[in-house]
Image (tube, rainbow, N blue to C red; front, side):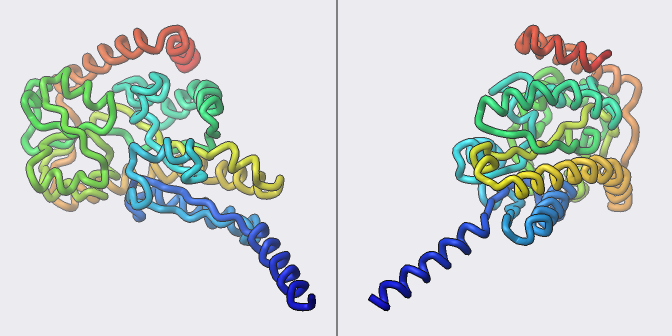
Amino acid sequence: MKHSLIMFVASLVLGASAQAQTRWDLPAAYPATNFHSVNLASFAADVDKATAGKLKITVHPGASLFKAPEIKRAVQGGQAQMGEILLAAYQNEWQMFGADGLPFLATSYDASMKLYKAQKPILEKKLGEQGLMLLYAVPWPPQGIYSKKPLASAADLKGSKWRAYSPATSRIAELVGAQPVTVQAAELSQALATGVVETNMTSGATGVDSKLYEHLKHYYDVQAWLPKNAVIVNKRAFDALDKPAQQAVLQAGAAAEARGWAESSKVNADTLAVLKAKGMAVEPPSTTLKADMQKVGETMVKEWLDKAGPEGQAMLDAYKK
C-alpha cells in the first residue's frame, strides 16, 4: 500500500512538472547566422524569459527539421507548433500569398509596410481557415539581380540558368527567356559551384549567406521587391497555452516584428558593402535593364490580378490609397 502511494505521489509530481513546461519546435529555412534566424532566436529567448521557462521554443534553422516547402504543412498538421515561411513561395496555393513577390509593386521599406498593412487582414483570415495564426512578418532586403556576366538589358539574361525559389521568380525567368531552375536557399551555394545556376534574383543578405561572390561577379541593385518571411503558429497549440503564455508569445512576436524590420534595413546596407569588399561589382541597373524589368513587373501584376480576382483588386486598391 505504502509503495503504491509513493508511486501515485511521484506520478502526480511528474505530471505537474510536465504540465509546467511546454516545448515547441520552430523550423526555419535559413542559416542560423541569417538575420531572420537570429531574430527567431531572440523571440524564443523573450518567450522563455516572459514565461519563466514554462514555454520553451526550440528554433531549428537551416532547414534542419523540415525543408522550406514542408514547413507550412508541418505547422498545419501539428508536427511543429510554429514555423517561419516565405509567403511568396505559396502563391500557387493562394494568389494573395504572392503579393509581396510581384516585381516593382512595392520597392522600398515604406511601400512594403503599406503593402503588408493591406495584405494582413486577408492573410489572417486565410491562415485562420487553415488552423493557423499569423504571428508576425519581416521583409527581406530589396531583391537585385546576380549574374556571371555584365547585363546591359534583359536580353542578356536570355538562355541563362536562372535560380527560381517561387512561382514569381520562375515567371520572371520565362518572361526574360532564361531557364528557371528551382533551388532552395540551403542548396544555392552548391548549385552555383556545379554550374546548375548562373543568374538569380535575391537580396544582398542571401548573397552573403550563400557566398554568391565566390561564383558570380555582378550584382545589379534593381530593388525589385521585398518578399516577407511570416512566422505562423498552429492555432490549437496556441489555444492550449494558458493566458499569460499566450500573451508572452504575442508580445514577443510584436517585438520581433519591429526589430526584424529595422534589422532588415541595416542588413541591406551591410551586406551590399560585404559583396563589394569581396570583389563583386555592385551597381545600379542601366536605364534599359530597369525599364525591361519594370515591363516584366507590369505583365506579372496583370497576370496576378487575373488569377487573384476581386480579392486581389481590393487589396491593391487598399495599398494604393
